[in-house]
Amino acid sequence: MPPADASTDAGTNSAPRAGSSTEDTLDLRLTDELIALFGDDAPVTVPGPVGGGLLDTPADWGAVTTSAGVFQLVPVRIERDLPLISRWMNDPAVAAFWELAGPQDVTAAHLRTQLDGDGRSAPCLGVLGGVPMSYWEIYRADLDPLARHYPARPHDTGIHLLVGGVADRGRGLGTTLLRAVADLVLEKRPACARVVAEPDLRNTPSVSAFLAAGFRFSAELDLPDKRAAIMVRDRALRNLL
Figure 1 (cartoon, one colour):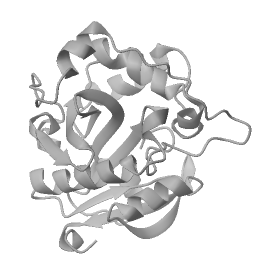
Figure 2 (tube, rainbow, N blue to C red):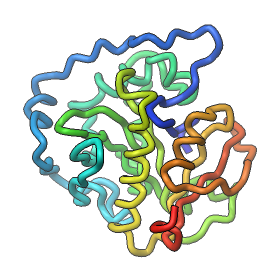
Figure 3 (spheres, rainbow, N blue to C red):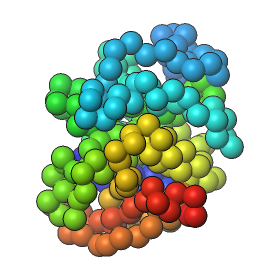
């Protein structure tokens, strides 16, 4: 599990704490390298596997067409993506649940834990219409500490998401992408029967986004860092919800 909440709502990563600002604090400027890599709608070719055999290599999953545009998960490269992700983590609305605000070293340590691990979690940028606009973690929930707290099944796959830009929040984009990525997981990981998430119960917009994306509410859990809602998207119900 991440250090705090790791989900999004239908366009906002989290509900800010009382008194925090919801204005756009990102003032995002893409580096030349990011512009060169993501500057059009063409699928991105990514070198090397991230996630390995434990996750059936999200780097190879390719692009999908959504109602919002062409979307692709692109594995994080710290040397390229750290300034962008760290800036997102320092948005008060994000920091309220992820708790990764601070200098870039804080975000870098979080990313390196996954990138240097055994492949049970893959950090990715979400690229929509050629623009990196969200941060994702695709992880093996059945191999995660989360599995100690709920009745995990083999190959359960978890999703963590934050939508980076303030302009992308509050308009249903999170729901669209959650559904797309959950369906992508089920398509590319045939051994996976369920996609799961554990948003903070305080983050009611996030829980609502998962419900709108075809997840069902399974249970409330007291986790070490939060009280969470366990959300599940079942392969068997994929075409019904």
